[in-house]
Figure 1 (tube, rainbow, N blue to C red):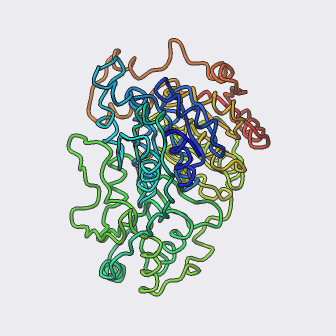
Figure 2 (cartoon, rainbow, N blue to C red):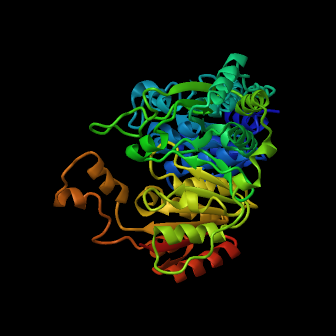
Figure 3 (cartoon, helix red, strand yellow):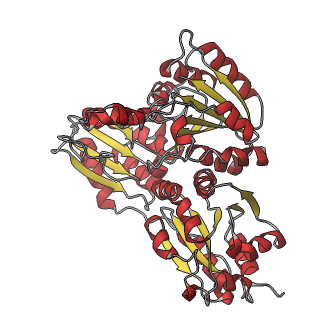
Length: 517
């Protein structure tokens, strides 16, 4: 069978299990675009901005546990997608970027779109390669897939010069399964067990795969047996939670609250993450959040088999998942609240009405600070967060999650300021008819930055406040959504919010609720 390099690459991606391409192509990618049409099996999803494509690839990977590809146009297109690739890197999401490049012989002429694509890609990529031969493109694609899937998961960027796409393609190699995660050395399990037996205050600090149900069952049993406390890192790629599941609180975001949460802790057992640090430096506040006299035991690194390490630790301390008991697991949903519309009543309404098996994509920022605790007893669901702190992830992440799990309701809890970064992804939701309910907290400001002004000790004046305000004029989210083809409603009362929430959960397809705060 005669095929060009682009067609061989598509076949290689499919052989590696990549079934979806999130795209925003340009001229240098036209042969790859044509190949996507000729080779059956790849779903192509168009975005109007590259940050939407990369954010969707992150959301898809978190729920599918395998990579999608992006298709981006040269260095500037990759640059437009970098913020959400940063978030994907922090989430350890497997993502394969296909980035078009000028033909190999054309690069030396320094045409207007020429750039150093490898240098742009490296800060967010675990693997970078430029194909130089059309017959090796399929092999390069499969190596990109393998690199993305290698534990703990990461971004792989394959740069595709135009002539390697249109030149004669080579054979598609056989895909290889990713290697199993490395097992933790027994000495670390023994050290963690010794900390649990010490009788001193101990926290089991969780991230990554330890926050899926099997890991939480084991961690909950260990905590119940030993008296240790469970805490998750501040921002997490995915937590399986809700009624009947082991509850876990997150370490608070504000430094003072995080230090208070860890005060007096003598042992920190770290599983699937790194020891906690502050998001930012502040005058006269610590960067490392654990107490200075706290002994830190790393039970399992993110790339290691966290569930196996927890299982062996549970065996060593005589814990079994049933030991957590029903009393340790939330079983009752909150009542539907009455009164005024505010962050607390919103949280209770979400906890009361969230449908079973929902996927929550949370970019609430300041409004949603207390949503997590109020939804602990909601029906079982997955909770996805803004892992890297680069705002503009929520709407694309929800889009990707909906494509990964078309039979599940996706709920995007969205701050208005960060939502405006990638609002164009609403158009993709409409075009693909995705079952996403977007709830925008319209407080008309970058509210979190107003709080940060105080935290850093700044003394703001009118110009500073103006830079953090989103009024004069206020954005009209109902009109914005309608312009992208998504039905929308505006509410400004608790009763209106509850009614719209019920209606949104009962229907399928994209819907936006603007909540005026």
